[in-house]
Length: 472
Length: 143
Image (cartoon, rainbow over all chains, first blue to last red):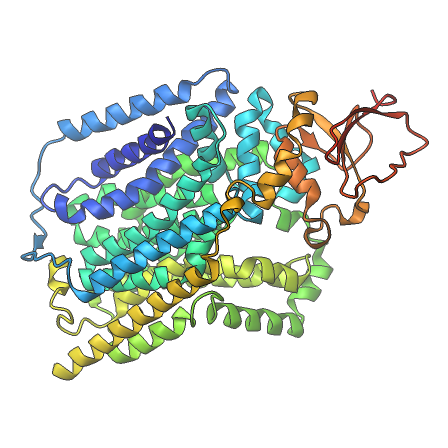
């Protein structure tokens, strides 16, 4: 039952992805990317269904399972009934998959070692690290064991448990427990594992489709080499699921340009992923807001603002239902955001944001954390700088808008983190020490993705970059 | 072009070397797994102490909390291992409040054979001592 409870959402995600991104011509080429997207999308949709079921039926039955099965059958039927069409605007270069070249072999070895590392950490910490059991899994226990009193999990008595955090992860864990009929620790472990490694697969497959397999392999190798990423995944923190959604939004903007006939569906998918990011962590709400602004700025500056509004309609169709759930949760169930609640008026806050020493501490912290990611042999940032110097940097004209969108959104995220630390009412050093590395990691996969989008393609370094090229 | 290919290959080599060494370093650091650790990690062990009291508590609602750790340290990670949080994790969906103003009070004690001094102004009695530092109290004065 545990396996069914975990795989049903993935099937729903796969059917939904295929419905929105319907290319059949490149089905084989994009299959891995679609499967990677399906994991997060399906998990997110199931979490939302479970939460709505909790709100409406207060746990009186297991109707959410019927809803999910019905949704899967409906989506599968729609996919089957949908007419075949040729994706005439794109063509695929002759594909010679080489799974035996050196980067691929080393990637598989690193992937396997990372997987073993993940398992070891999971054995050592079956309930996850601090935030996992004190926030995410504890909330899941309230949702699962609480019956009609599940809202007790948001009692003000539990103020220390960040009650305003959104419920994608706890909702999903509780849903699987409910489905399986027991609260085994295997469920949050499996969900964390799938989110961690599907983020790696998403990075690999998206770059492979856009730029070539070799770059996909290198990008995902860098991500796996960032040991803190795998450690945080095994610790069952929600930062890794959020990094999955932020990466998928950025990557799908590039994918959308390659498949112009699926513009509408892919824009809906981008909206959905943005909304699910907001359902995962509070930072996701910021990301959603910044993506909307960044896209406006990028399209307005480099193209035509009319295109933005044309894109905004399907994007809104995607994120609005999830956003409505987030708003309902924030206004009816969760107490106010703790960072806002803990502010002590205008003057103390003003004093903090004008304090030079605080600025210095935060800047130093940002540089230190971004250039360390403590656990790796050296900072992956240095490795990327060396790789950039060796290979060169070039922004392709067709990628300009998406790169500007992504860079603007990520810079706004970093700026918002900066101001959160600047105005925090908690001890600054403690606050940064317990969260900055995780915050940076949330955007790290998206950062690697953008980095490999601007790396110059010097011919075919391993004789394989052509294998993944789908060009207009 | 040849120069570029050489540079690219060097770049690829550096990335692979970095990732392989980072992952290997982490594996070497973490590879020591004591077989006895399986299912005996600190959280599982802590949680197991509460298995008995769980059956005696109501299925929902708020219960009080009494401990031998000073109250200002109950929520602190370093001093007490977040014992109130761990207790809450173990007993969810019952809400545990660091207070004695509830009918049922969960006692969580770490020092063996200690003499527990109960507040004199409250009518608190021991219902059951689970003999592992966990004691269930009843505050007869509470509504």
